[in-house]
Length: 85
Image (cartoon, rainbow, N blue to C red; front, side, top):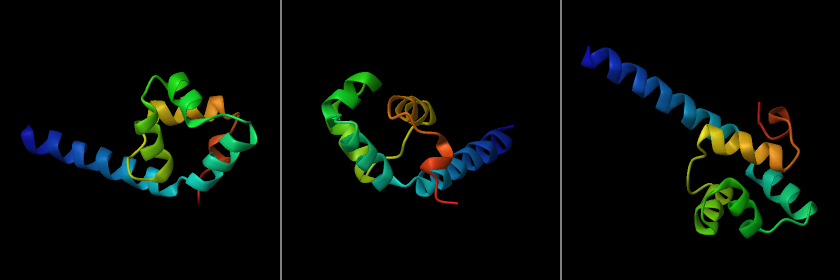
């Protein structure tokens, strides 16, 4: 059972990593600036610290899928607009 759980954990981790690398972080940053939103405002809306959001936007930390979904709603983006396919 441990092997199966570990396998699915690794697949999930690999999927999340691939999703993160597919996100065009520059588009997210430019859209935030275009809308006049500060990192502080976005972080408050997401319920995380400004430092955490800064790391996400810079690509130094991986997005949780729920945080990404919420961010796309705040920035009025469809996921296809920020994904590098």
